Length: 433
Image (cartoon, rainbow, N blue to C red; front, side, top):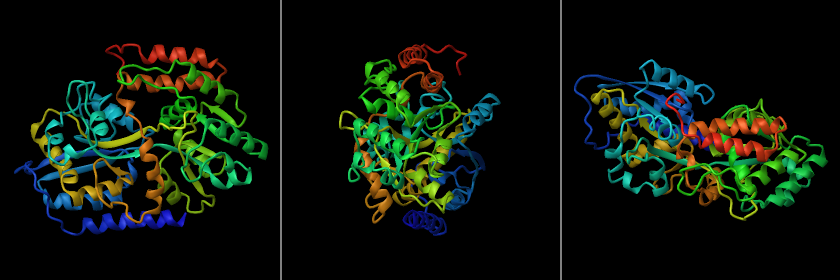
C-alpha cells in the first residue's frame, strides 16, 4: 500500500508546485470580463477534485490570470449531490460550472434544456483530438455538446488477494491479465465460502450509488447487454441477463443487500468483511488507502468475469458543463475557465493528474514510472461504448436498483427484469423530472 501513498503524494506535490509557479495563462479567445463576473463551480468528488485544499492550489493560477472572475467552489458528495443540484435548479440558483459526467450533464440536465451548448469549445484544435467515443458521449441528440470532457477511467472490480490466496481461489483468475471466466468466478466464490468467507460479495441495491458495478457484473457473466448498440432503448430482458441474475441469486456467498450502496460496499470490502468489491476503479483505490492507512491486505483489481473471454467494462467520463443561467457574460467566463484547464497542455496535465484518471486525448508520459496507473491501464482496451446517454437514463437507474431489491425479496429474476424493461423504456412524462 505504500506505493500508492507515495504516488498520491507526488500528484499532490505536483499540483501544489504548479499552483505556485506563476504559469502564464494559455492563449484564449475568451477574454476575462472588464467588470467583475461572479462564477460558481460545483464539483462532484472526481479524484482530488473533491479535495478543497488540492483544488485551492489548482485554481490559484486561474485566479491570478483572470482576477475579474470571482470564482466560488462548492464540493458535492455523491450521496447528496444530486438533490443539492435539483434544489438549486428549482430555486433558480443552479451553479454556473459543474464537474461530473454525461449521464447527468447530457442525459438528465441537458435533455431538460438546462445546459449551455459547448460546441464552440469542442471545435478548438485541442478538442478535435479527443477520442471519438468520448466526444460522442458528450453530445446530445440535437447535436449540442453539454460536457467538455476532462478525464476518463475504466470501472472495474477488486478482490482481497490475501483472502483469495488463503482460500485457494487465486487459481481461478489470471493475475497477469486481471481477467477471469464466469466459471472461474463461480469456483472462486465456492472456494471462499468453503473457507469460511460466507460473504464473498454483495449485490448492493440501496440506491443508485455505484450501480455501474452491478450492471457490469450482470452483463458480463453471460454476455448480456444493457442497451441496444445505438443506445436508444434498454435491452436487459434477455436470456443472458436473466441467467446471470439467477446465478447470483442462488450462489452461496453472494448476497443481495437492499440496505447497501456502492460506497458502503467499498467500506465493507476495505474492512475485510467482503472478499470482493464490484464498485471499484483506480481513484477509489487511492482514496481508500489514504483513508485506511492500516489496510493490510493486497488489493487486486479485476475485470468482471465473463463467459465470452472479452470483458466489457463501463467507462467513467468526467468533464465540465455550464448551466445556462441566462447571463451571456457568466457563460463566457465559464467557458474561459474550461479552456484554461483544457486548452493548454501544462494546465490540462495538472487537471487530469488531480482527477487521478486518464486523459481523453493523447498526452505523452503523464503517468511515467507510475506502478499503480500502469497496473490499471490494462483495463483501458476493455472499455465499451458509453451507454449512459441512453434516453430515460435517470428513470432506468432507479428501475435498476429497485429491480435488484425485488430479487433480494425473492422475486424471480425473469419477472423483475421484465418489469425493469417496461419501466426503463416507458416514455417519461413532463413530471418525471
